[in-house]
Length: 210
Image (cartoon, rainbow, N blue to C red; front, top):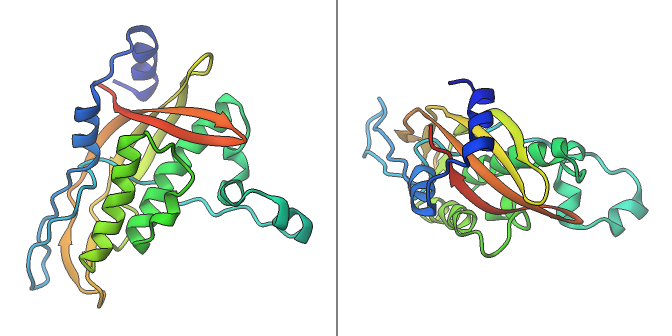
């Protein structure tokens, strides 16, 4: 089934799995051992098909006045992901997963700060997983997943975006840059609920049933 066809079916039937299923899909990646000698690594809660997109670079801000007055969260959000429009919502959901990638490569949970509400359990689990990976002295050597499709399912009264992800096999590196494992490949689809107040924020993430 194509992404467009799946989106059409979701619009009609609202076929979503409960939170527990979404969390399991997003946060359980077991790393496979690589060719290099060393122990097989098991990543902290991440996802068998979760994050990834090439992280979008924040737009350049040249005006000193604008820089000082612009909300720091808005400042890091790409211009295309800022508007309160269907296209803006789809771009923001894509950007959010890109920032998760960024966090797992840098070990810095600030990559996703301000992009979700405190009640989004899955979002908080992502931030915790980024911290846990850093505590283990590990990081991903590349973007884990790639967003293949991002489209707004609903916009009024509730905003929901369908995201199709393709997980890549990337190296898990230790503090010295030595490969200690590899992530498995996979695919998954998620429905991301958003709200807009000055900027978009994620309120919920659910796994879409194929």
